[in-house]
Structure formats: structure tokens, C-alpha cells
Length: 216
Image (cartoon, rainbow, N blue to C red; front, side, top):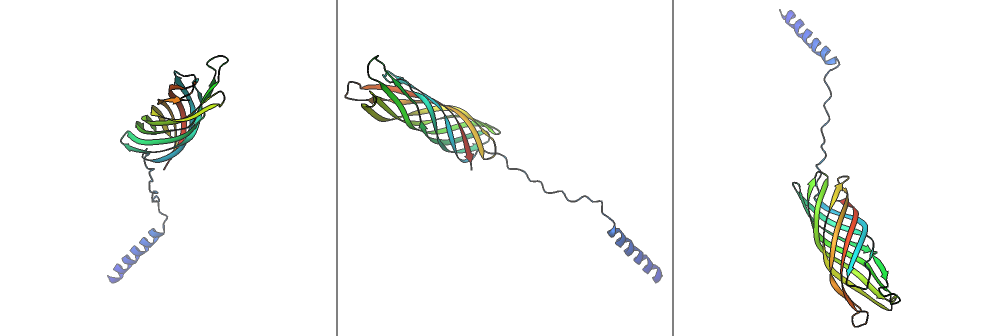
């Protein structure tokens, strides 16, 4: 009896050892799934912008100027659901200028712009990686008026506002492209006060520009 039990035990051990040596048909464990984090507009960003600007002067011997602009942008967005709110500031070099001779044979007037800046709030709706937004806030611009090719010349900083809107698209989680329009009405200013060429005029700018931003 003992011999019989020992034989059965040895047979079981041998079968287990043989089965352990057989190649397994079990599939290797699947690699863990790694999910990319969902995109969000929240974060600080910096960028570059450029485009064209078209000025309008009212009640003036100066002619309305036009030209390009180029500069830098900094801002911050915060996203809650589909709503995105933020602040944005930019500082651009503006190249608007135009020379005119309002009276044939009279003196020549030239009006040009230099630095311009805006500091604005932004509010918009995010549709996945596309942001549609409205914006508004402060605008300021440095202007130069001259008469008779510099015999009279005056630099004047003009304060005003900015309102507009645009669209921004996230190419990657960090790089975005945008296009926007801004209307900037400025306070009246007086040039060449106390001279025969003195005048007070109104001024506004329509700016269309594109930009690229890097979001941190």
C-alpha cells in the first residue's frame, strides 16, 4: 500500500514538473495605458504680434496715416468649463505715417506714430482648441506731428481705449495662433499751440493683426 501511494505521489510530481516545462499560451501583460492630459487654456503666455493699422484724423490739416505694426504680447488665461477669461498686454512699434499739403503751395504737414500699447481684459468661449473672444481696455499711442518738414515738430502721447475681438487656435498644448481686430479711439490733442499752424484734432485707429503665443 505504501509503495502504491509513493508511486502515485511521484507520478503527480513528475506531471507537474513536465507541465511547468511546457511553453505557456498566456498572453504577456498589456502595457499600462497613458492618457494625454486634456487641453486647457489656463496659463501664462508670451508671444509676438504684427499686422496693419489705419488711422483716422478728424478736423485736421494732417492726413489720416496708415502703416504696419509689430511687437510683443504677454497675458494670462483662466478656463472654467467653456468660459475663458484673462488679461493681455502688448507693446508694439507702429509705423503709420502720411504727409499732406492741405493748401496747394502752402506748408507740408506730416503725421506719424511710434510706440503703441494696450492693456485689456479678454472673455471668450472655448470650443475644444479654438477660442472665440471679445476684448477691451486701455490703449495709448505716441504720435508726432510736424509742419514744413520739421520747422515745427511735436511729440504727443495720446490716451484712449481699445475694443475688439478675435479667434485663437491651439496648434499644440503650448503653441497658439491668433487673429484679432481692435478699434482704438483716442482723446483729442492739440499740436503747435500758440503758432499759426495750431490745431486740435481727434484720432482713432483700426488695427488688424495676427500673433503667435507660447503658453507655459
